[in-house]
Image (cartoon, rainbow, N blue to C red; front, top):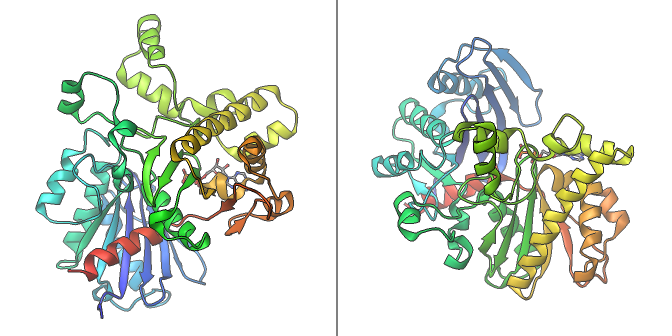
Length: 405
Ligand code: ADP
């Protein structure tokens, strides 16, 4: 019997540190929150105990270390804390964006693992440095408590070469580890494991297409419970049209803009990651799906075009993945859009009618953030909404590693 009872899950970003504390007895969430605007004069702590009232307070947090001090105080606070002392925490699980080729699975943090995370800084320049800072803040504050790194790329590392290779000179690809990695791995894994239960199939025989549709969106072709292909690439820029990311474009657009507009690598990076996607083409002034759906329903032409492009790209990949997988047990929707936008799901599912999907319009309309089947009982291709839970997945991965020590 393992004595791992309470696990803290940390997602440390460039200016924020999100946290969630779990009780492994029943995998229940004890408290959650975040420190935002770290490094500025207006840092803020948000804390909420399960079933309690959310509270916020201005805090001094110029570093992630300072931010974590406030988190520790909040969760052990006498009035509304979730535990009496930090010593109750048995392990900390950290979300780390990029594991490169170094990591195919979650890893117990030690000096070698930290070195490898550092080696991936080039591949995840915005996320990996603050992810490591978060790990080091926990190491310092909670001496002797094991930290586990759970990589967003990890679940995708089962892809075969035909899925992950880029057809560029092998020496360059090898020198810089240039290949498709894929992201949202923790979400795709959670949804896949849940789908195995829902479809009553052993994971090893489960073939599905998982659609994580949020601000950032990606699909994964799951073959025998493992990732066979996914839409994101070396970075999260590849694949679907997203809130502010272009997704797939001809790379020649970059050469063209470099020549005509004098844009350098950084400007192009900002253009395609932050100023493109739905934000750039919807005419709504935002990359938010709620705004887009409202504008489409109001008959706005640009919005309709943007929405159709969003759906078109998804259909293109689902169709391709179904051909690659052969036999498919179902399509699963997750993420902010996948779980909540019945409008987007309807548009996607209707376009999948030629592939055997028959939507249950009533079930679809009624499903927002809950686990439910949205295809008709006689649909040849089942479609489900399975709300994702990345924190719980990190919690489970951390448990698996720490309990097995
Ligand atoms: P992130 O990638 O930042 O984690 P989320 O998974 O939270 O993003 O998804 C955010 C997206 O989900 C936004 O485009 C938002 O408009 C969309 N969304 C959330 N709720 C709804 C809703 N009720 N209807 C339509 N879209 C929704």
